[in-house]
Length: 467
Image (cartoon, rainbow, N blue to C red):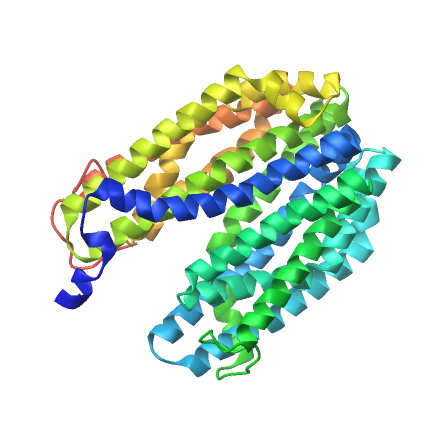
């Protein structure tokens, strides 16, 4: 890095606590607004449409997360290519990658529509366990989201393209506007017109369409580095291969959420001793709360990652250490406060969403158990982002994916066989404890093999970062 670049790099100068605050605050704001939608949508459904509507949407959550995983695979894979092409001055190559991503999105969307028309009805009936009303609401909700999925794909692609062009503020502003519009339309369609889950889906689609229109206007204005429509250069099939390879890692996280939620719903159908609909509705409330809590924490991790990465690249290892400590302490305090709320206030939280005493009772029963070790998981997210910033992709992958694929899913599949229905909820804190042990093993391995202090800090600048 040149002296001029170092002087103008805001991450390398000033008190790190203020640098962290300036970096994290806008990201956390954006993530909080995004997370707030999950809360508001569930509140509208529970209050205006009833607990069965909330159950129907919760049952479709695995399908929705699968769609998010596919959208993330296309947009994130494209963003990696576009950022490098723009950095190299190859604007035509960047345009070619965006063009290929749009074509791939259309192919994936068509596949989703075909799968829905062939399997949608039997799938929703199976998930609803024979409840025709819940199945019908779930089918209408999913159908609207799938049929209009090209808009969601396009919005994700354009958002990541804007970020790769350096227009992070514009991207965040568009996302916040889309979220606010989504909440407003959902209130009208669910609360005023009583359209239930179909209104929830329609509100999302209308917000996406308006956001896409805003992106089109922005692109046509000429104020962006990439045009709205351009074939660019590069093989479409070659770009597709690169997009799929590069987009697979981030999409795996969302796929894991889809698989875990699907397994929980299946476990409830097999092991539940209460009314299945009440238990699923309660799980829907809890999962929305956990999503809301997770997104700002992910924003803090992204901020810590940016600060640590820049200082590591500049060889300022004292600031690298300090940045991790700040992020770790923030995550620890943040998660401790949320865990206190999860354990001490489950009844007020449940009553905020629904007025059905049976569903509230399920929230009170499940939430303290399911969130009993929440405070252990949050700091590990910060460390995973920190490893990514240092270029230690292998260590980052262990912390990011092992919790779901090596620990979480097996526990959800096996623990209920030993403990019955309570095992569904015990699996979550048990997984957090096991993941803490796994993280301790990873730190010890990095101490021995990489000679890193505490398994986290380089004693001297390495020649290259290794995976």
